[in-house]
Length: 304
Image 1: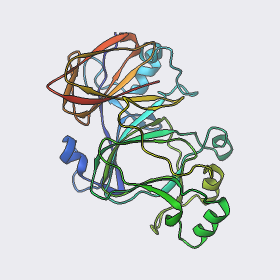
Image 2: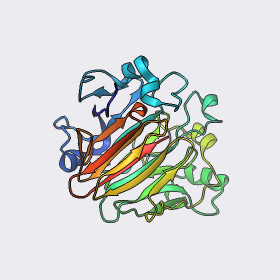
Image 3: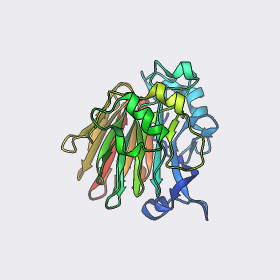
Protein backbone atom coordinates (compact mmCIF):
# COMPACT_ATOMS: atom_id res chain seq x y z
CA UNK A 1 0.00 0.00 0.00
CA UNK A 2 1.39 3.37 -1.01
CA UNK A 3 1.42 6.31 1.41
CA UNK A 4 2.31 10.04 1.22
CA UNK A 5 5.84 10.14 -0.15
CA UNK A 6 8.43 12.74 0.83
CA UNK A 7 11.60 12.95 -1.27
CA UNK A 8 15.21 13.99 -0.84
CA UNK A 9 15.75 17.35 -2.61
CA UNK A 10 18.13 17.55 -5.58
CA UNK A 11 20.15 20.78 -5.40
CA UNK A 12 21.33 22.64 -8.51
CA UNK A 13 24.11 25.22 -8.52
CA UNK A 14 23.23 28.24 -10.67
CA UNK A 15 25.04 31.49 -11.50
CA UNK A 16 21.98 33.39 -10.23
CA UNK A 17 21.41 31.27 -7.10
CA UNK A 18 22.04 31.86 -3.41
CA UNK A 19 21.52 30.39 0.06
CA UNK A 20 17.96 31.45 0.94
CA UNK A 21 16.62 27.89 1.01
CA UNK A 22 19.03 27.15 3.83
CA UNK A 23 17.83 30.16 5.83
CA UNK A 24 14.09 29.84 5.12
CA UNK A 25 13.61 26.08 5.03
CA UNK A 26 16.75 24.63 6.66
CA UNK A 27 17.67 22.79 3.47
CA UNK A 28 21.04 21.01 3.79
CA UNK A 29 22.69 22.91 0.94
CA UNK A 30 26.21 21.93 -0.12
CA UNK A 31 28.65 24.39 1.41
CA UNK A 32 30.17 27.21 -0.59
CA UNK A 33 27.82 26.95 -3.55
CA UNK A 34 25.16 29.28 -4.95
CA UNK A 35 22.10 27.01 -5.12
CA UNK A 36 19.43 28.25 -7.48
CA UNK A 37 17.14 25.24 -7.67
CA UNK A 38 15.92 22.48 -5.40
CA UNK A 39 14.18 19.78 -7.43
CA UNK A 40 11.67 18.47 -4.91
CA UNK A 41 9.73 15.93 -7.00
CA UNK A 42 11.47 14.86 -10.19
CA UNK A 43 11.34 12.02 -12.68
CA UNK A 44 13.40 13.92 -15.25
CA UNK A 45 16.38 12.30 -17.00
CA UNK A 46 19.02 11.37 -14.43
CA UNK A 47 17.43 13.65 -11.84
CA UNK A 48 15.40 11.01 -10.02
CA UNK A 49 13.84 11.87 -6.68
CA UNK A 50 14.61 9.39 -3.91
CA UNK A 51 11.98 8.57 -1.27
CA UNK A 52 13.02 9.83 2.17
CA UNK A 53 10.29 8.35 4.41
CA UNK A 54 8.63 5.06 5.24
CA UNK A 55 9.10 1.55 3.85
CA UNK A 56 10.01 2.82 0.37
CA UNK A 57 12.87 5.02 1.62
CA UNK A 58 15.80 4.78 -0.76
CA UNK A 59 13.64 3.93 -3.77
CA UNK A 60 13.41 6.36 -6.70
CA UNK A 61 10.18 7.85 -7.97
CA UNK A 62 11.01 6.16 -11.28
CA UNK A 63 11.11 2.72 -9.67
CA UNK A 64 7.81 3.36 -7.86
CA UNK A 65 6.27 4.41 -11.18
CA UNK A 66 7.59 1.28 -12.89
CA UNK A 67 6.27 -1.00 -10.17
CA UNK A 68 2.79 0.46 -9.65
CA UNK A 69 2.00 3.59 -11.67
CA UNK A 70 -1.74 2.99 -11.40
CA UNK A 71 -1.77 3.13 -7.60
CA UNK A 72 0.32 6.29 -7.67
CA UNK A 73 -1.37 8.16 -10.53
CA UNK A 74 -4.91 6.77 -10.58
CA UNK A 75 -6.55 7.83 -13.84
CA UNK A 76 -3.93 10.49 -14.56
CA UNK A 77 -1.84 9.54 -17.57
CA UNK A 78 1.95 9.37 -17.29
CA UNK A 79 4.17 11.05 -19.85
CA UNK A 80 4.46 9.27 -23.20
CA UNK A 81 7.71 7.65 -22.03
CA UNK A 82 6.15 6.50 -18.75
CA UNK A 83 7.51 9.29 -16.56
CA UNK A 84 5.69 11.08 -13.74
CA UNK A 85 3.80 13.99 -15.38
CA UNK A 86 4.90 16.93 -13.17
CA UNK A 87 8.17 18.45 -12.00
CA UNK A 88 8.25 20.43 -8.73
CA UNK A 89 11.01 22.88 -7.75
CA UNK A 90 11.94 25.69 -5.39
CA UNK A 91 13.91 28.51 -7.03
CA UNK A 92 16.14 31.01 -5.24
CA UNK A 93 17.00 33.94 -7.51
CA UNK A 94 19.64 36.31 -6.12
CA UNK A 95 20.26 37.62 -9.66
CA UNK A 96 17.79 37.69 -12.53
CA UNK A 97 17.37 34.62 -14.72
CA UNK A 98 17.60 34.71 -18.49
CA UNK A 99 14.70 35.98 -20.57
CA UNK A 100 13.35 32.71 -21.91
CA UNK A 101 10.45 30.76 -23.34
CA UNK A 102 9.22 27.16 -23.29
CA UNK A 103 7.90 25.57 -26.48
CA UNK A 104 4.18 25.05 -27.10
CA UNK A 105 3.05 21.48 -27.81
CA UNK A 106 2.63 22.15 -31.52
CA UNK A 107 6.17 23.54 -31.86
CA UNK A 108 8.21 21.41 -29.46
CA UNK A 109 8.55 18.29 -31.70
CA UNK A 110 9.92 20.37 -34.58
CA UNK A 111 12.65 21.72 -32.30
CA UNK A 112 13.46 18.41 -30.65
CA UNK A 113 12.16 19.54 -27.26
CA UNK A 114 9.19 19.01 -24.95
CA UNK A 115 6.32 21.37 -24.23
CA UNK A 116 6.29 23.01 -20.83
CA UNK A 117 3.57 24.96 -19.06
CA UNK A 118 4.32 26.08 -15.52
CA UNK A 119 3.26 28.36 -12.68
CA UNK A 120 5.11 30.31 -10.03
CA UNK A 121 4.05 30.80 -6.43
CA UNK A 122 6.02 33.60 -4.78
CA UNK A 123 7.15 32.41 -1.35
CA UNK A 124 9.38 35.41 -0.63
CA UNK A 125 9.89 38.73 -2.44
CA UNK A 126 12.46 41.37 -1.57
CA UNK A 127 11.23 44.99 -1.86
CA UNK A 128 11.23 46.03 -5.52
CA UNK A 129 11.78 42.51 -6.87
CA UNK A 130 10.60 42.11 -10.47
CA UNK A 131 9.08 39.40 -12.62
CA UNK A 132 9.15 39.70 -16.40
CA UNK A 133 6.19 38.11 -18.22
CA UNK A 134 4.77 38.65 -21.68
CA UNK A 135 5.19 41.73 -23.83
CA UNK A 136 4.12 45.31 -23.34
CA UNK A 137 0.88 45.95 -25.15
CA UNK A 138 1.31 46.55 -28.87
CA UNK A 139 4.87 45.25 -29.26
CA UNK A 140 5.26 43.49 -32.60
CA UNK A 141 7.51 40.66 -33.70
CA UNK A 142 9.43 43.09 -35.90
CA UNK A 143 9.98 45.53 -33.03
CA UNK A 144 11.09 42.67 -30.82
CA UNK A 145 13.68 41.40 -33.33
CA UNK A 146 15.04 44.92 -33.89
CA UNK A 147 15.39 45.52 -30.15
CA UNK A 148 17.07 42.14 -29.73
CA UNK A 149 19.65 43.06 -32.36
CA UNK A 150 20.40 46.26 -30.40
CA UNK A 151 20.50 44.43 -27.03
CA UNK A 152 17.61 46.63 -25.86
CA UNK A 153 14.89 44.09 -25.10
CA UNK A 154 14.09 45.06 -21.54
CA UNK A 155 11.87 48.10 -22.38
CA UNK A 156 9.58 45.85 -24.47
CA UNK A 157 8.94 43.23 -21.80
CA UNK A 158 6.06 43.53 -19.30
CA UNK A 159 7.22 43.80 -15.68
CA UNK A 160 5.39 42.89 -12.48
CA UNK A 161 6.31 43.68 -8.88
CA UNK A 162 5.14 40.60 -6.98
CA UNK A 163 4.48 40.17 -3.29
CA UNK A 164 4.79 37.01 -1.22
CA UNK A 165 1.66 34.95 -1.86
CA UNK A 166 1.25 36.02 -5.49
CA UNK A 167 1.01 33.41 -8.24
CA UNK A 168 1.63 33.72 -11.97
CA UNK A 169 0.62 31.32 -14.72
CA UNK A 170 3.36 30.79 -17.33
CA UNK A 171 1.89 28.86 -20.26
CA UNK A 172 4.18 27.59 -22.98
CA UNK A 173 4.92 30.40 -25.42
CA UNK A 174 4.98 33.13 -22.75
CA UNK A 175 8.21 35.12 -22.63
CA UNK A 176 9.37 35.29 -19.01
CA UNK A 177 12.17 35.79 -16.50
CA UNK A 178 12.42 35.75 -12.72
CA UNK A 179 14.13 38.82 -11.30
CA UNK A 180 16.53 39.06 -8.37
CA UNK A 181 15.32 38.76 -4.79
CA UNK A 182 12.66 36.07 -5.20
CA UNK A 183 12.06 32.59 -3.78
CA UNK A 184 9.50 30.75 -5.87
CA UNK A 185 7.71 27.42 -5.77
CA UNK A 186 7.53 26.22 -9.38
CA UNK A 187 4.97 23.67 -10.59
CA UNK A 188 5.44 22.53 -14.17
CA UNK A 189 5.01 19.85 -16.74
CA UNK A 190 7.80 17.30 -16.56
CA UNK A 191 10.00 18.94 -19.17
CA UNK A 192 13.40 20.58 -19.03
CA UNK A 193 13.21 22.36 -22.42
CA UNK A 194 14.06 26.06 -22.15
CA UNK A 195 15.13 28.47 -24.88
CA UNK A 196 17.02 31.59 -23.79
CA UNK A 197 16.43 34.59 -26.00
CA UNK A 198 18.41 37.12 -23.92
CA UNK A 199 20.66 36.80 -20.85
CA UNK A 200 21.46 40.38 -19.83
CA UNK A 201 24.99 40.17 -21.24
CA UNK A 202 26.07 36.98 -19.44
CA UNK A 203 28.21 34.68 -21.62
CA UNK A 204 25.81 31.75 -21.86
CA UNK A 205 24.29 29.90 -24.80
CA UNK A 206 21.39 31.75 -26.44
CA UNK A 207 18.64 30.17 -28.57
CA UNK A 208 17.32 33.08 -30.62
CA UNK A 209 15.87 31.18 -33.58
CA UNK A 210 14.15 28.58 -31.41
CA UNK A 211 12.78 31.30 -29.13
CA UNK A 212 11.31 33.28 -32.01
CA UNK A 213 9.43 30.16 -33.12
CA UNK A 214 7.97 29.70 -29.62
CA UNK A 215 7.14 33.19 -28.33
CA UNK A 216 3.46 34.15 -28.39
CA UNK A 217 3.58 37.67 -29.86
CA UNK A 218 -0.04 38.24 -28.87
CA UNK A 219 0.66 37.70 -25.18
CA UNK A 220 0.44 41.17 -23.64
CA UNK A 221 0.77 42.25 -20.00
CA UNK A 222 -0.41 39.19 -18.02
CA UNK A 223 -1.45 39.70 -14.40
CA UNK A 224 -0.87 37.67 -11.25
CA UNK A 225 -3.66 35.37 -10.08
CA UNK A 226 -6.55 36.74 -8.04
CA UNK A 227 -5.32 36.06 -4.51
CA UNK A 228 -8.89 36.22 -3.18
CA UNK A 229 -9.64 32.92 -4.91
CA UNK A 230 -8.61 29.55 -3.49
CA UNK A 231 -7.75 28.14 -6.94
CA UNK A 232 -4.73 30.04 -8.23
CA UNK A 233 -4.21 28.25 -11.56
CA UNK A 234 -6.33 25.74 -13.44
CA UNK A 235 -5.14 24.46 -16.80
CA UNK A 236 -5.08 21.22 -18.76
CA UNK A 237 -1.77 20.17 -17.20
CA UNK A 238 -2.54 20.83 -13.50
CA UNK A 239 -4.58 22.71 -10.92
CA UNK A 240 -3.01 24.57 -8.01
CA UNK A 241 -5.05 25.75 -5.02
CA UNK A 242 -3.88 27.57 -1.92
CA UNK A 243 -5.40 26.26 1.32
CA UNK A 244 -5.22 28.31 4.51
CA UNK A 245 -5.69 25.93 7.40
CA UNK A 246 -6.57 26.48 11.04
CA UNK A 247 -8.41 23.16 11.47
CA UNK A 248 -8.21 19.71 9.85
CA UNK A 249 -9.34 19.55 6.22
CA UNK A 250 -10.13 16.37 4.30
CA UNK A 251 -9.49 16.09 0.57
CA UNK A 252 -10.60 13.54 -2.02
CA UNK A 253 -8.10 12.14 -4.48
CA UNK A 254 -10.84 11.85 -7.17
CA UNK A 255 -8.95 9.17 -9.10
CA UNK A 256 -5.68 11.10 -9.19
CA UNK A 257 -2.65 11.95 -7.05
CA UNK A 258 -2.16 15.18 -5.08
CA UNK A 259 1.02 17.07 -4.28
CA UNK A 260 0.93 19.04 -1.03
CA UNK A 261 3.48 21.85 -0.64
CA UNK A 262 3.88 23.42 2.79
CA UNK A 263 4.20 27.20 2.38
CA UNK A 264 3.92 28.35 5.99
CA UNK A 265 3.65 26.54 9.31
CA UNK A 266 3.49 22.79 9.87
CA UNK A 267 0.94 20.24 8.67
CA UNK A 268 0.54 16.49 9.00
CA UNK A 269 -0.83 14.14 6.35
CA UNK A 270 -1.64 11.12 8.46
CA UNK A 271 1.63 10.46 10.31
CA UNK A 272 3.74 12.28 7.68
CA UNK A 273 4.81 15.74 8.92
CA UNK A 274 5.59 18.62 6.58
CA UNK A 275 7.33 21.85 7.51
CA UNK A 276 7.48 24.95 5.30
CA UNK A 277 9.45 24.20 2.15
CA UNK A 278 8.61 20.48 2.15
CA UNK A 279 6.44 18.54 -0.30
CA UNK A 280 4.52 15.27 -0.22
CA UNK A 281 3.18 13.19 -3.09
CA UNK A 282 -0.15 11.68 -2.02
CA UNK A 283 -0.93 8.59 -4.13
CA UNK A 284 -4.32 8.22 -5.82
CA UNK A 285 -4.82 4.86 -4.08
CA UNK A 286 -5.41 6.63 -0.75
CA UNK A 287 -8.71 7.95 -2.17
CA UNK A 288 -8.99 10.55 0.60
CA UNK A 289 -6.68 12.12 3.18
CA UNK A 290 -6.73 14.75 5.91
CA UNK A 291 -4.46 17.75 6.38
CA UNK A 292 -3.96 18.52 10.08
CA UNK A 293 -2.22 21.84 10.78
CA UNK A 294 -0.31 22.55 13.95
CA UNK A 295 -1.87 25.91 14.71
CA UNK A 296 -2.19 27.77 11.41
CA UNK A 297 -0.61 26.65 8.15
CA UNK A 298 -0.75 27.42 4.45
CA UNK A 299 -0.27 24.77 1.78
CA UNK A 300 -0.52 24.45 -1.97
CA UNK A 301 -2.63 21.55 -3.24
CA UNK A 302 -1.59 20.48 -6.74
CA UNK A 303 -3.46 17.88 -8.78
CA UNK A 304 -4.25 17.00 -12.37
